[in-house]
Amino acid sequence: MTKGEESSEVQPVQGEESEGNDKDFRSTWLCLHKKLLVLICRQCEMGVGSADALGHATKQHGAAISGEERKVFRAFCAEHKVCQLPEQAPIPQAGGPPVKGIAAPVSGYSCRADPLNCRYSVRDWQTL
Image 1 (cartoon, rainbow, N blue to C red):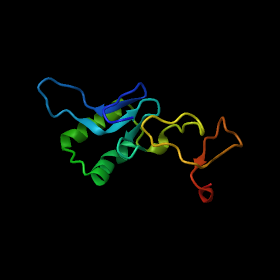
Image 2: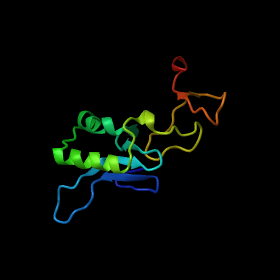
Image 3: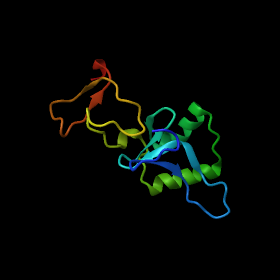
């Protein structure tokens, strides 16, 4: 997914449009995955929870976010029931289709004891 691209699964993070207000927040670095309800950093191609998103944008990308933009962001997250932490999002099926906006999957290990109910996956064997 490229910047500015929108699909049925993802949408840009933005505030409500209001006439005469040029301060409406529209994120060029975040989008919302509508099914997983997690934010995706467009530059890093990774999931970010609403609790960490603004800090991530500031620390990793040098974004300057005003107090008004923070309020609009929090309202957007509340309205769309965005997960505060990426761990709260449902985990996609290992080996399933890639998640739009997230970097390509890496090799790893996943639970095979109960693949329909357990989606535990890790990148390296020591973490398993």
